[in-house]
Length: 450
Image (cartoon, rainbow, N blue to C red; front, top):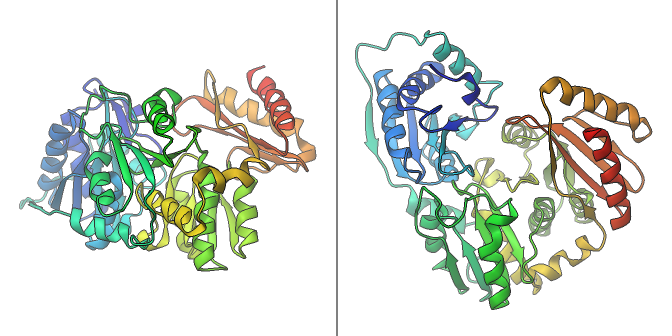
C-alpha cells in the first residue's frame, strides 16, 4: 500500500523501506515518462545505501514506459540539473532525500531546461496516476539506458563564475557532510591556491559523523570547532545532495542565508550594475538595500525553487537567493547550485581584500534577524487560523499574503508561513535593534503559540 503523503510539494520523499520502496519507484519511473512523454531523460543518484536499488527500480520503470535514459551515476542534484540543461535533455530525476537522515530517500524531478516538477505541476499528476493504478499501458518497444560522465564539464562550468587565478590563498575548512560534496569539492579546490582542511569527505549514506543538514547547529559542531582551532578564514559546508552550501566566518559564527544572498547580489552588481535580483519573502532588508546601493532591481518572491526559477526567467534575473541556502544563477540555466556560491564568496573576499567577517560587519551592525523559528501545529486548519489572527493583529503593518502573512513597520517586519512539507508555522522576523527584534519576536510567537 502506497502512502500518499510521500508526494510532497517539491519532491517524493519518505522513510525507506516503510514508505519509499523499489515497487513505488518502478511505478514512479513509469509515471514520470507517462507524464512528460517520449524523450531523453537524465537519471542520477546520491550516496544513500538505498539509492542504488531505488535508482535501478526507477530506471526499469522508465525504460518499460518507453523512456530513453542517460545514467549519470553518483552525482549531486545540481549536477543533474546541469546535465539536463547542458545536454539538452527532456528532463531528469535525482534519487535523493537531500538533507534528511540516512533512513530517508526520495526523488527530485525536472522537465526540459531543468525546470522543476512540483506538487502544483507534475508531481500531482504522477501521484494521481500511481494511486489510481492508472499509468497508461507501456509501449510494445521499451526504451534504453546509456551512461555519461558529466563531472569534467561541470567542474569547468562552475569554475567559469570566477577568475580562479585572482582568488587569494585563504585558509578554508570544508565539510562535505559525507554526502555528494565529497566527490566535487576536492576537484574544485585542488585548482585554487587555498589551504584546505577537509572534513567528512568520505561518502557515507548512513551519515555516521553527523547528518548532512548544516542548518542544524548540532551538525556544524565539527566544522565550527575546526575553523576556530585553525583561526581559518572561512568554513563551508554542504547538505547531502550538495545543492546548498552554508558559511561560517573566522570566529565560528554561522552566516544567515539572506546575508549570503546580499553578498552574492553585491558580487553580481559590482560587475553588472542594473541587473535584477530575486529574493524570498522571508529575507532581511539587507538584500534589497544592497541591491539598491549598487543600482540593481530587487524583486520579492514567494518561497520555493519552482516559483523563484519561474520569476527569474520572466525577469531575466541574474541571481536569486533563499534564506535556506538555495542560490540560483541565470548563467547556470536559472538552476540552484551548491558550489558556485562557495567560489563567488571567496572571489568577493579576494576582490575586496576583506575577511568574510569584515564583509558581514556592516550587515550585522544594522540588521538583526531572528532566524527561522518553527512551531508545530496540530493541523493545517489551526495554521490557517493563526495566520488570520496575525493578519488582524498587525493591520497597521499593511499585511500582505504573497506567501503566508507578512507585515512591515518602520523598525521591524515579519513573515509567517506554513511549511510545504510538515505541520509547522515558520516565523522570520527582523528589527533595527536587537531589543526590537527580541520584543517583536516574542510578541508574534505568543500569538502563534497561544
